[in-house]
Image 1 (cartoon, rainbow, N blue to C red):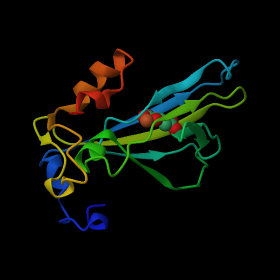
Image 2: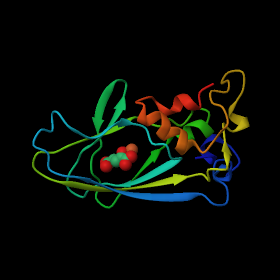
Image 3: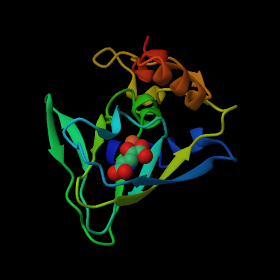
Image 4: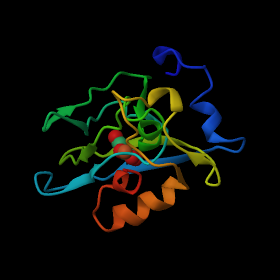
Length: 167
Ligand SMILES: O=C(O)CCC(=O)C(=O)O
Ligand SMILES: [Fe+2]
C-alpha cells in the first residue's frame, strides 16, 4: 500500500510498533425469522488498521456502503477479504478509506465468518504520514494512541469513532 503511494515501504507498518496484535473474532449469525427487521452487525467501520475476513463459504450477508447505497460483497471461495480499517485511513491522511459495512441476517441459513483485526500497539502513536500532508491535502487527522479504546467509547454511544481522530 505504501509503495502504491510512492512512499517508503514500511511507513505504515512502522507505526504498528514491535508488538502489534492480531485479534481473531468468529462471528456466528444464527437463522433469524425476521431478517428485514434485524441486522447481524449494525453499520460500522473497523477500528483496526487492516482486517482480514474469511467469509462463510456458502452464505452471503456482508454489505458495503458506497455513495449512500449498500452493495453486497460476493463470496469468493477460499479468498480472504482485506478491509481497510480506520487506523490506515488515519495513517494515509484519508487516501485509503475505511468503508462502512453491515451484516444482514438470513431466515434460512446460519452464517459463520472469521475476522482477524491487525492492530498497532496501544502505546504507539499513529498519525498521518508526513509525506501525505501538503497544501493541497491538509492534515485531516490528529495523532492518536490506543485508537481501539477510543473506538469503543464512541461506538457504544452510537457515534462515529473517527470523530475522535478528526482535526
Ligand atoms: O461477518 C462479516 O461478514 C463481517 C463482520 C464484521 O464486519 C466485523 O467483525 O467487524
Ligand atoms: Fe467490520
